[in-house]
Image (tube, rainbow, N blue to C red; front, side):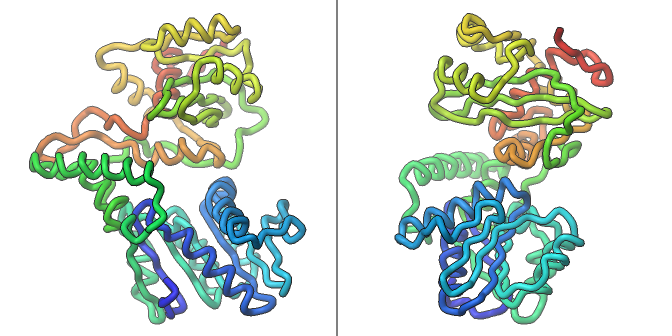
Length: 385
């Protein structure tokens, strides 16, 4: 990346390739070399900025012994160097706000495939140097617009370029690689084969067949929305336990991720729910395959309802969810990731079948339990007394 010299630098990378971990230190070192440099790091939403680039920046600075609390403005998400250079972390939800942010020396669009092109374009035209990174789920404006323009260049990275990849991450990647290879041996170029092309090899993919197209993000749940209930899907070592709150207002259902974590025993789940202020008088619809866990949480004072399940319960629950107008809060990062990647499974010939993949579904399963159990009619939400 240090050898890239064009004004617009496009970095297409596989997962855990180190692209973001590399770009941020490069940008900050440029700030140190040139006083009063203004650098702006942008992601799709503010929570995505905070849990992504801000965390990476802080970790890098602390690891290098450079961090100073006095130079960090937590409200503005801005770090000011001693030479008066600034690196700021932002998100924009409109072209107008992007234009109003003014000019800058360096722009970094992180996970740019999730940033609308009109917003990106308004920022790029007001920037002297531009960095763009992403996982190439599919071709988008970085390929069709930016790389067609003069003074732009391209770099592709994979996990093989990251000598510091954690062993656990590499283990997970190799497992998914084996699933992709198994598909290929069977003459199927399905979900896992395509996943490996994108997230393992850094190629442009074609993650088609998304199950839900009836959702969008929202900053927060409106104050007047009513809490309908909660959905709970159990996990433990490899899969996360997911708890999602479901709200309703003005014909819209709002979904807010509360818990998404591995390694939680039932007592720890109860303690987390208490600390999060989960309402003990509102029903939690939980996976009925975990009757022992349901009974234990009920004994700890929670109102647990066993999810209604049957032979076709997944397809039924998914169909119920597809009928609704769904909004996911910006802070529900894991849930957003699932909605983007939850697709129909494919047969040996690569054709989509009426069955979802068994992946990216922990938060979605929690939501599905609620709707397939409690909603006889999506237009008449059930409020628990």
